Amino acid sequence: MRSIACLPLPALALIATPAAAQHGDRAASEAEIESLQAQVAVLSEQLAILTARIESMAQQGSPQTATTAAPPPAAASDPSAPTVAIGMDAAPEIESADGFSFKPFGRLQLDAGMTALPDGLARGDGFGAEIRRARVGVEGTIPGGFGYKIEIDVATGEAELTDALLTYEAGDVELTAGQHNTFQGLEELTSSRFTSFIERAAFTDAFGFERRLGVSAQYGSGPVLVQAGVFADTIADLPESDAWSVDGRVVYFPVVAGTQFHVGGSVHYTEVDDGGTVRYRQRPLVHFTAERLINTGTLAGDSEFGLGLELAAIRGPFHFAAEGFRQQVSGLGLADETASFHGGYIEGGLFLTRDDTRGYRGGRWNRTRPARPVGEGGIGAVQANLRYDYLELNDRRVRIVGGSQNAYQGSLVWTTTDYTRFQVNYAHIAYDEAVFALPDGTRDYSADVIGMRAEIDF
Image (cartoon, rainbow, N blue to C red):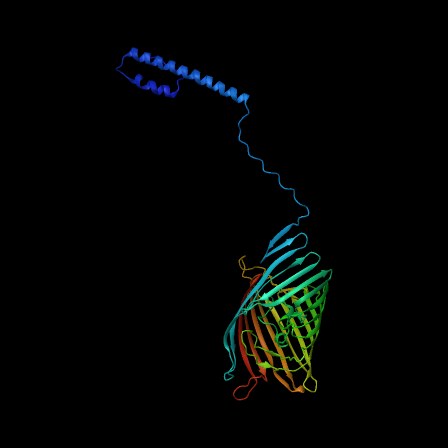
């Protein structure tokens, strides 16, 4: 048989069957093979001609290559357009390079507990609970040194305006117009997010400390802080009320040998609304009880004068604080008499967790940031506090017997993260000359109170 070289596979397939025939005519088979070879030769020649034509066309014409459309040129950046940055901590904060900023904030505080009053007193006690605060607001800055803050509280189911103010900063001086605190003292000016007990000292509520609509100035340089302002009444009583006040505070807070000190004082003068009255009273520690066991009743005074003193220190895990306040009301009765009342507290606290300390900034307590928060391998910061709280609402010179209280309090504060806290408080309160008597006429007795709080802020 003749060998066949360089044949394509289809040709081999075509000749495979006749080549395999063992009983056909040899001459016929050879003729068929020669015919097939001739056909293959013709096909090969035609393929070569076709290939040559394709190569010639490729050399003469433009290559048909796929191209990617170039993106349109980017618009030229406007150098006058402000750069905007969005930061994220507990809440987003938007800032622009030309001085605008905007930040939402808020807090939620849930309280529950028990009050135990003497048997036979026939006053409401037992379990209680409430949403103590549910606040939301916004704050920010405006080019030129201006700032703003607006906050509302919806804990009662109705919106109540707390802060609404405009500020202006120029160096060490800050001017404020709007509803804000009247520089009453260390604990009153400290946010409820950072206090060591679920409620502030008894005198702060008893003497009616509140935000008022007014204008004020603050000077702060190094460890020196001076604050003063003139205020009308609180927004809720305006425009009907014509009450006004002048308030001032001075604080010195140096750091000496690793210890943060705080020494301050405040003075307050208030003209009461024409035909108005004052009343001083206080609950047993927690806010969710309506019972007030010491109470001066309504007094027809025409002015108030208050003096406050502040002292505090922080060193490592320890802190100490003490405040005293004297409240004087004048214009009582036909004899135009003056009555005086006073209150104060002293407390000490210790962090039980390593490397934690109480926050402080600018003349008031600030946020505690756990060294090892929950969620990052730690248990947060645990703080134990003890406090003695005294309030005197008696002035026998003018025949006012509102009662007095000596409260012995303890708190355990668990700050799980920078923005979440849990508290348990206990108070044993001894009352003298309370306004409600026992069945046998006794007005000297005691009450025990437990208060708990879960809170978050952003």
